[in-house]
Amino acid sequence: NDMNVGGIIFKYMINSFYKQNVLHFELNQAHPGFNTRINSLHLYRLIKIDVDESILNPQIFNNINMLVLNGEINSIEANIFRTFNYLYSIQFDNLYFRNLIHKGIKWVQSINYGLHVNMSNRFEIESNLGKNFQLRLEFSEFARLKPESVYSFPDEDFCLYKDFPFEKLIIIFMAKSYYLNETVPASCTQRWLGKYYHIFIKSREVHKDTDFYFYFGYLQSIQDLPCNFDNMCAKCNSKTFRFERTRTINDFKEIFVFIEFFFFLTISLVSVFGI
Image 1 (cartoon, one colour):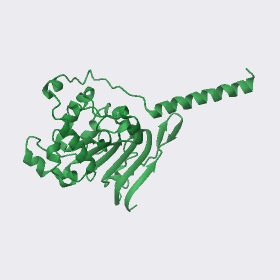
Image 2 (cartoon, helix red, strand yellow):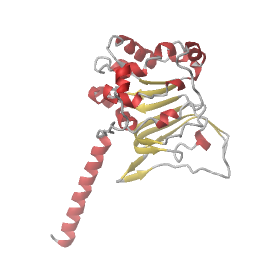
Image 3 (cartoon, helix red, strand yellow):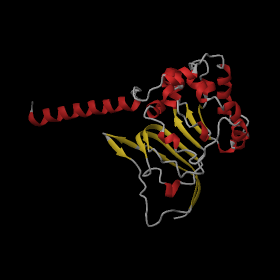
Image 4 (cartoon, helix red, strand yellow):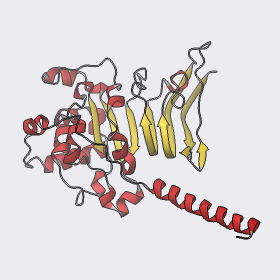
């Protein structure tokens, strides 16, 4: 029951019509907790996965510091991170983040549960800098080859982040952004999400993070971008915002598998019945 490991890695979890390969951990009511000491959990090459307690079982992974979700996440359970008190970083694949965030940020609000910093009080912010939480959007090799596929917090998504829980000291940024500074379009949404980063950069842990340091430098370079945040917030209406899902590589793979199956079925029927 007891474990003491640096990290655990799982790969190739798939939830598709052509293949079901998802690892689940059952909650054990008779044994509500294990003496687990796991530093990080890495889930790679995910395809259309719903992240809930059956995957991110709090009885096993409650003490993790870092979580890597590499691949396509279909959804994240709303309150899943409420009990993850030691978690300080979640890494996403930039290529698939847009479809996830377009479904809402309720799961983000469960991060750093119980922390409510007065963002108008600079002293209170600086006193709690050590509790900052990072949401990192990592660039894949595909994103570097096709920069237009990069999710860069466009202004059409501003309303998604209007009520972003800044009081929980959550930092959301594009990691490895120095690869794409010349191609990432500047947006007011980027400035909105980074409006407290000039304070966060004073944290020793944040300052030594090369990815965040370069992204902060990028934000500094777009400070002259005209943004009327009061006007943008006033125009937001959650009832009229529509989720717009973009097709992913996995969608095209499903189409290919379906066509391949259709042809296989047709050929089989011709062979059997001589049609």
